[in-house]
Length: 169
Image 1 (cartoon, rainbow, N blue to C red):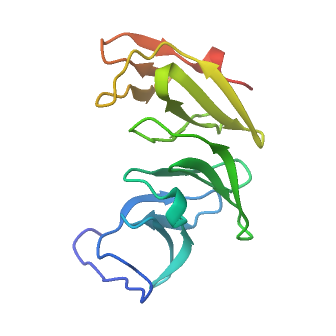
Image 2 (cartoon, one colour):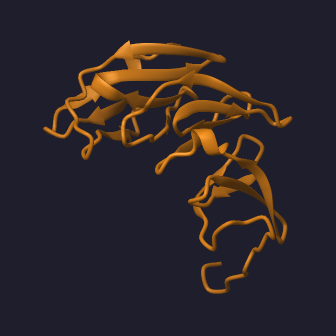
């Protein structure tokens, strides 16, 4: 309710703070800590769901759930953790500083790679496209969606790039 707080603890938790609360496709609540541990909240418990392997850990990471309820995580690579616990590297590369995954209305998680590469995970496949984002390491474009189902990125120079037509269906 925002007034009463309850501490959710887990003996495996490597930190005291949790971030980026999200709901998966089945209504389960997830969050992560800065040590790369992802937790699911069940009733009054905080359960370890997944931990980014040390070899793939990065300073910044992001996650989203795809249409099959796989957890897609952007870290040093793009990885998938299935609901059954299987972990698979989807795309190995060195991502731009901001590893932000964006979930579009089409149910597609996308992120930017260096030099304007748009990496798309959709229908259990990776697709790469180019997009003129004109951003640097400190200023990534912002993602917006409108009430009219338009989705676009705002570049750092203020230009808007409509992405609905350029993403796979």
